[in-house]
Image 1 (cartoon, helix red, strand yellow):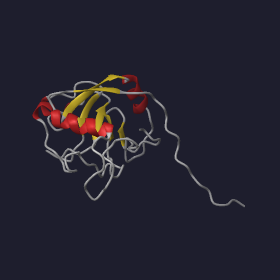
Image 2 (tube, rainbow, N blue to C red):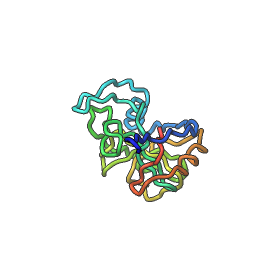
Image 3 (cartoon, rainbow, N blue to C red):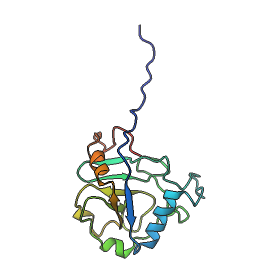
Image 4 (spheres, rainbow, N blue to C red):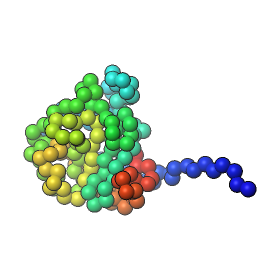
Amino acid sequence: KLGPMALAPPDPIHAGRIVIELFDDCPKTVENFKCLCTGEKGQSKLKSDKKLHYKGSIMHRLVPGFMIQGGDITMGNGNGGESIYKGNTFSDEQAGLKRKFNSKGMLGMANSGKNSNTSQFFITFDVCPKLDGKHVCFGRVVEGIEVLDKINNVNCDNKEVPQIPIT
């Protein structure tokens, strides 16, 4: 007779490190991203009371051949996120909207429409002209592009959730 079973999530893969160049013509977006990388802004002042830091957050959405998305520091599933700007959304920067997603490894802000940036971001796996003018492009991968290839090959479910943790 079998007793209760405990299922554990799979171990994350260790695909490597990605180094990103941030573009200085999007200062507000870059400052938000940089501070969320370092955690230097401390705790959220909003009801989430979460640490304003990407540490421990996952890449919650994977669309093979298109992009990987992460940065939901409040809920971890794509339904949350906070900026360093009192947690509120912040406006799109024109220089970033004018820049094209014209290669693999472009870094952009995920949003829910115009001027709705928080902490969520994505990195492209390919040229993505459908994102041009709709998402602020504020950086690019300069080292570790091969890591994107490994991530692009991770299985995901029908809701675009990676089947292994990607951090």
